[in-house]
Image (cartoon, rainbow, N blue to C red; front, side, top):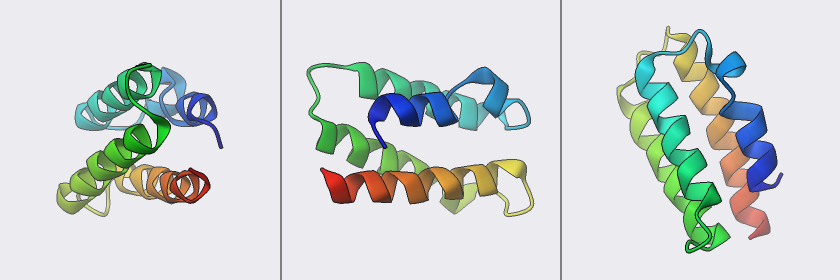
Length: 83
C-alpha cells in the first residue's frame, strides 16, 4: 500500500464518521506527514505507526475507534516492511 492509498483508505471524512475527534486529529496529522516532501517514506510511516500505537494505549476497546486504529496499525506495519 502506498502512502496515498493509506490516506484514501483511512483519512477520508466518510470513513471517519463514527470515530472520535482524537482519531480525526491523528488522521489529519498522518495526512500532513505523508504529504510532507521533506520527510522520507520510512520516517513518515514510522511516525504514523507511533501515533496509532500511542492512541491505541488509551482508547477504550469498545469504541469504533479501537478497531479502526487496529486496522490502520496492521496496514502501517505492512507498509514498514516494504520500505
